[in-house]
Amino acid sequence: RKEVEQDPGPFNVPEGATVAFNCTYSNSASQSFFWYRQDCRKEPKLLMSVYSSGNEDGRFTAQLNRASQYISLLIRDSKLSDSATYLCVVNRWDSNYQLIWGAGTKLIIKP
Amino acid sequence: DGGITQSPKYLFRKEGQNVTLSCEQNLNHDAMYWYRQDPGQGLRLIYYSQIVNDFQKGDIAEGYSVSREKKESFPLTVTSAQKNPTAFYLCASSTAGANTGELFFGEGSRLTVL
Image 1 (cartoon, rainbow over the protein chains, first blue to last red):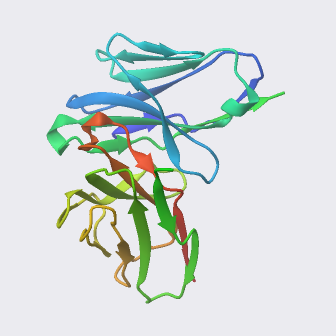
Image 2: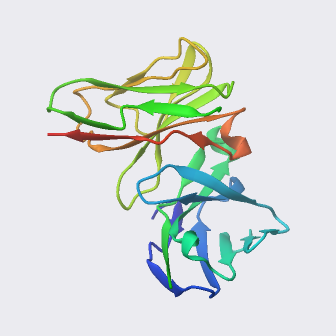
């Protein structure tokens, strides 16, 4: 079992719709959580950090559920430019805070 | 503009040859990292360095080597001992350790071994 698991998708969503996907992590030593975005054949870029209280950045909302060991990303009013792969990332205090990466969820927004 | 530059972007090599991938940053970051990305898998850490003249093995260091002689530079050599070197290689840097979670990546180097 992978330490950080994501549904690979693809999620095919019409423009303007709301889409959500989850990421589960298995190690209780996981300390901090992040969502990165990666466009096709490009480098990953930080989208947002995920705080215990949840956080929102425009159309994007991230939530953390420590009890069930998952994080979520919600995208409202999706745009064509949101099409990308979304990578879930965690770091663990017991591994010198090195980042553990999920394989990503592919999102395709259709006009 | 500050950033990370990787070169070359695409590289083809014959089996058994060593290749060196360049990574230069002008962000004045102390920490630098090399990752490998394969289809259907998360990024895997090859080596990282938190300070000049010091580096540590990541999860998949076998068959790779690095150096950190300057703060700005962290080249990766893929040696002939690496059994499956064809992959997308990403170099990254950060202001401190990875506990900040924010890594800045170069555009990547796509290595194909024939």
